[in-house]
Length: 429
Image 1 (spheres, one colour):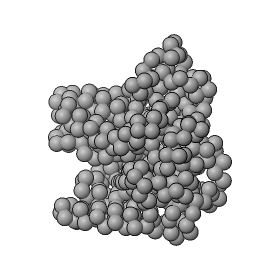
Image 2 (cartoon, helix red, strand yellow):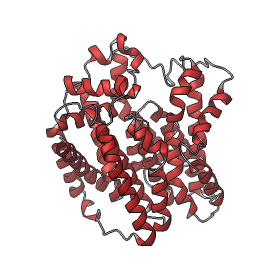
Image 3 (cartoon, one colour):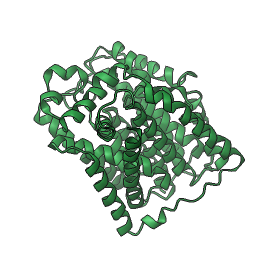
Image 4 (cartoon, helix red, strand yellow):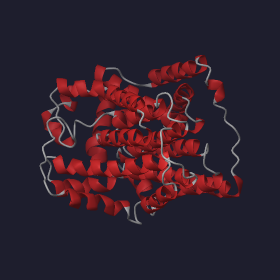
């Protein structure tokens, strides 16, 4: 069973290598890109009664590698022997120990967190059994309390994993989330190694990977950390685009933002925050519009499916939910969101160190981008609770410590990059 799970992930890695070559991503981002590609394809195909199994995995891998080779970019992805140094080796060993130590825990933990079995796991098991998003369940009014409006990337990934293992295993399914965490850390390293010294990159990756909220929330099998990893990759891809002069189109950020938007409804908030930050930092309207259209294109099949079956959202901003339902609670909600963000028991020192790094790199384009992204993201998340028809204090109490993951991971991955930035005068890149 575990061997089949690893083989499926190996095919996803192969697909990611081709996508990384085509989109000019660093080699380290291949695994996360492959997982994102698998999630997007399987989620969309589930809407039209197509099951994503071994054949689809193999075809996606072959087509992706072929595309990367035909474009002539595949040979450029060279896996070089890592030069870790005195700091890198202990940090790399620490990350490996964390993964090995976590493996048996993720292998045997019951699917006992409420949203994991009632919402994400329920949908994943249904996709595994039915082979597609049967509207008799996925659009049933009786199942409406389980947030039927949430996109299907995570349940579809779980279903692909379940098919690979021979059936939906409510314990071993956690291993896929651990592998997603590994893919995210690898993607961050792939981007940071291009501009940040090893002495700064490796210890900071250990800090992020060992953060209690990072490991603990991965273990819940919720969608918040996978969302945060896609957001973090989009943030680093955006920073790389800015550093290159913001020329051409931000294709890599658009890809990871599309994956984020299909992971959870809050992905739209993060996409909007990142696009606003890009516009403020670069003034490149054409590139920002392109990325926004890519995000909308990734969501469009799901939006059409929801509209055709009259499934409405009760959790996020929509055309029908712009009414301010809880006036006056915005400061209270923002304070409640910032509390876990500053807690040593969740994300120790992530936000304060990010703030210091922004000040040190002030007046650089990346600093303006990072600060704008984090501020707008928190304000957007705050607005969710202001307009939601749900009882705001209860809604905030069970989701507030998780919805902030994308902002904090985005801040975390930018911190070592900002620490290496030299102050420069803001102008057009």
